[in-house]
Image (cartoon, rainbow, N blue to C red; front, side):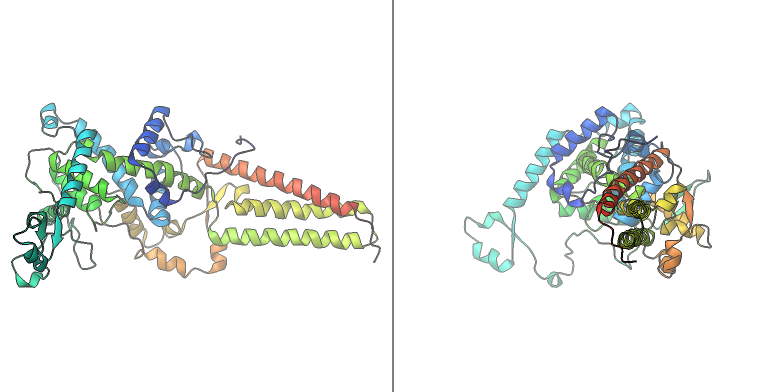
Length: 456
């Protein structure tokens, strides 16, 4: 079974697209996706490979949630979006399972409250102008004295004055989660530095001119503090790509409540990026069954085959044989053009004939001695409150760079298990074959119509 003859794979969505769309438009698009049940309405994505299917675990390799996570880590470099989204879904479920008395301690944060908080913060930012002590002395005694805020230009003059800041992630800085212990029931639990988490959270709130209240009776307050120091604050290990307005809005909300609605604006931004940017790009990437060296090799092979077809057609035309023999050049044209069209879309026809794909670089060494390291990386990528998503120091990176080019072209293969992906590849191959037959027929007609050369 194949899809329509006019099928086209998903177009690449640039990351800058999200910045041109307002939060209201994103929310409206997401509401439409939820009402329709999936994002299958996106061009080139069948319902079997929709975003909701992948997240719910209804797909097979290479289109599973783990494959999606690996793509975001190694290719798009935005795995924090999926990590936060999975945490948020789980957080909403756990919050709803709380007793009614505990849920009442964290009231819902409405959209009107969020908008009012942001506007108040913007007015406050405009009203407070930071000036040096010299300028403040000039304004002293005038009408402008009350509209300025004096800042200390040299912190060294007061050793006891340390302005609040949001610490960045430095090489020699310990992670906020640095101790691992095993609980009595045998489950592995991450125990972070409480003071470090609270200090970073306080710094994030101080940058937004808010007062942090870490000790409250609201549920999941400690976990919310970890989320702030992992995803929200500036310089965090998995900092989300949020605008200043969105960051202020979520911090204002989290200052007052731990209700899931406090993350409403951030969750909408993250989900929109996943559904309408990362997901189409992931499906487009998954369609490619060969690595880059193999695809380049297939393109070169297609060009060479086409040239051989033209050389054969020219020699036969210049010879003394009958015109019908010139149509034999179409064999080379069909093979070469179909190979070139498929390679242009990232597919190798040889691999497609077996419904195989190349193993990804991070999958190649999974069975080697560093299998435990790869397992730890995959495990940590699904840890919602883990460290950064950097993979440059993984053992497979250096090993793959040293790999011979010929070996990369003919790397290890694995069978494609996802039926919907195989159907997409079948459709692309048939389109390539149909295009090759049409072009070859035109070229054959032109050469057959030429007069006989008779040179040999």
